[in-house]
Image (cartoon, rainbow, N blue to C red; front, side):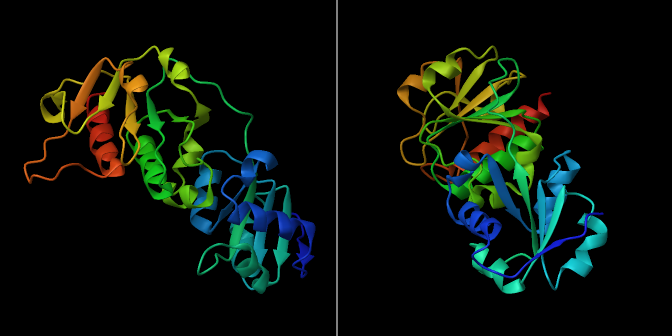
Length: 255
């Protein structure tokens, strides 16, 4: 186990970098690193084989967590408890976290089951969809430009650790999706086959669109089928994350 480096100054370069990663949705892209807060996300990353570059502990939490996490990272750091509050964007800061190196930008796997996010902008929705995709056996998230940043802090928290078991590709264009070698299914609120009657292919790619505008015309043109969810209660539409959970579960059940 590496003995921890002690930090007490808010002006320390590591503290400044963690603050930036915790509070700027796009900072991870330049840094090539992501900051995850709390023992749940840390355990999830380790379970999927991620080794943190740095493990950070509040001074009052080090004794509690050193046995479980003290040997996980290349470097351990203990900071004054008040610094975790300064770093975090959470109302109640977590007592520990990991700084993770992100893998090199992955390419699209043309034959793997995928979820395509078309300008889905709410971080909670994106994180929830990522979580559903992992739960129901999808291997990759393909995000069209304009979608919320996949590694943003709020998306990470909503994903509850699902990020670490998926390939995440972002900044894509419609043309990038055109090369997929699996059937493409577009969600629709008003047209297509009803989900509960449809025989769904596997593997496949689901298109999930912008909260207000839905799937763009260019992407919808790539779909081999359009699918809608029966709503006997009469609502006009479902939240995109709720619709995703229903559709992805139906696909997973067909495997």
